[in-house]
Image (cartoon, rainbow, N blue to C red; front, side):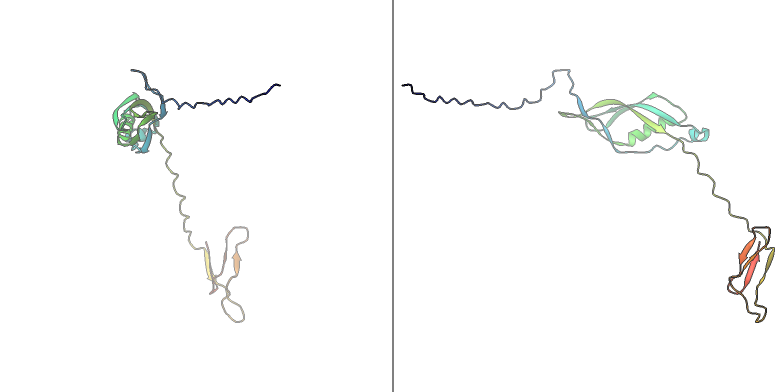
Length: 175
């Protein structure tokens, strides 16, 4: 007689902890996970010379930003002249920045930044006030029998667009 004994095997699955991020080898850089960003934007005043000439421009700058978000250097890569370059550099130096970040934390970077100047057309002049025309005809409309003034009577000149309505005291003016 055969007797079968159950054979129980248990397999334990060992869970290995996730590998820690590898430290970069000497000279190796970690990828940037967050680019630098502007925390406080400063608008540059439009250069007067450029405004007088009706010019717009984009100044390409190279910014060196430290790991603390401080600007270390700003260089003009594509100068535009007419006061644009100086205005763009001054504005960027006045801005507040958040540094770039890697998985290991904030990092200093060098990046290019375009500062644009667009000259808005001047607003159109306001519509001129309508000229006050001299009074051509004026009078009072009254009821013939009672001689009482008549209000809200419409008066017009045939063949023209001149028309008016009498006021509460029967008065009117046609200009």
